[in-house]
Amino acid sequence: MASFITSPAWFYGIDSALQIVTVVIALLIAFYGFHIYRFIGQKKYLFFALSFLSIGISMVLGSVTSFLLYFVWMKHNALYVLVHDFMLFYEVGFLSHFFFHLAAYMILIILCLKIEDLRVMSLLFLFVLLTLIIAERNFVSFYVVSLILMVLYIVPYFYKNYQENRNSKTKRVFFAFSAIALSQLLFLLSVWSDRAYVLAHISQLIGYITLLVNLISVLRK
Image (cartoon, rainbow, N blue to C red):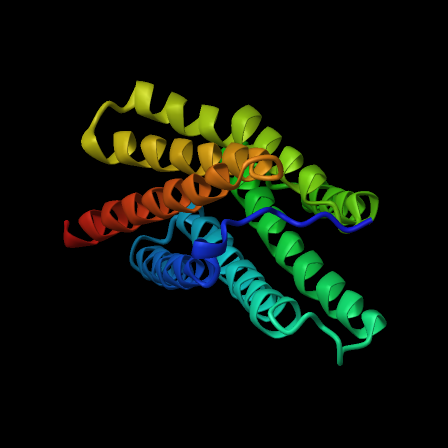
């Protein structure tokens, strides 16, 4: 059964706009990441760039699907749209969004754990596919998995990196991923609270802006 995140009526469209801003930031981060990789040659920047490119693609798919969901079908009560066509678009749109989002996290985990074995990498992406198959159209399962990946693997890595290299750059990166992890928790809670949905978008945007500022500061040096 499909489960929709509850958004306050006044926030309709604003969430899509915030996602578009996040898309631009994610793609800029990917661009700068590729640029740094070409300049320095360190693979960690390549994985970082690929991760945010995947996030950018994910956000585009999510924004388009949400916009059509709110303003095409729901606003017009979907009287002239076949239920089958609606559910097919919903499944393809959001499952694609979820796939690229989880894939981005897996790329970050490959970076954090310094995984080089292609078989292990393929296993991680197989896990993503299995998660989507099991979760089907359930937002809760997706955000539970996202939160677990962030809390157990990604955030601890950047916290450890900050502890070993205490400077403003590592501190910003740790703060940014903590904010993104918080957004995943808030998106999970937004199934029951529309306020959490608004806060999730704000927390997510703060995280990506912080990462972009950090990458620009790296490039300037």
